[in-house]
Length: 212
Image (cartoon, rainbow, N blue to C red):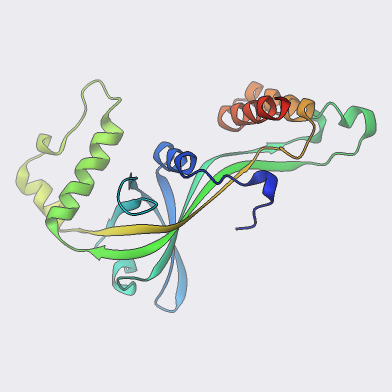
């Protein structure tokens, strides 16, 4: 990924936070002689390995797990928000008219080595952790024990686990940091007014940091 210095996000903690907050990622792999991309919910264990370990599962009918071998390189991409930015939102545009449209966004790229985990104990753990995480805000959280045991056992046989030890983390937060503070703030406020809160708030934070 091309990352100009002013858009680089080097903090492992920040990147882990992006993955946890936006766990639905794109798993990019090269198997079967071609590139492949699968859209999966991931669970991050930040304590396993030097940079953390990702866990997910795919349908047994998905050829991905047969086309990959343990140790193959893969890439998981996580988006933490994106939005179009109009040059009209920059105060300086109305003085010099030297601004153009752009697109701001926040992404984390997790490079790693895959291990195919075709065992019931691993799968049960992954599904349980994903469920606990995403049901936590429900008034009555669903749990695996709510379903008949034989039903759950049948479904677990229909999936295969994917474990990825992260070997390299890259992060990019393109928030107009190369602009004047007033322009960053102006665009951030415009995005907030239009409901693009994730990028808008991040831009306002970037403006405040640059102003210090």
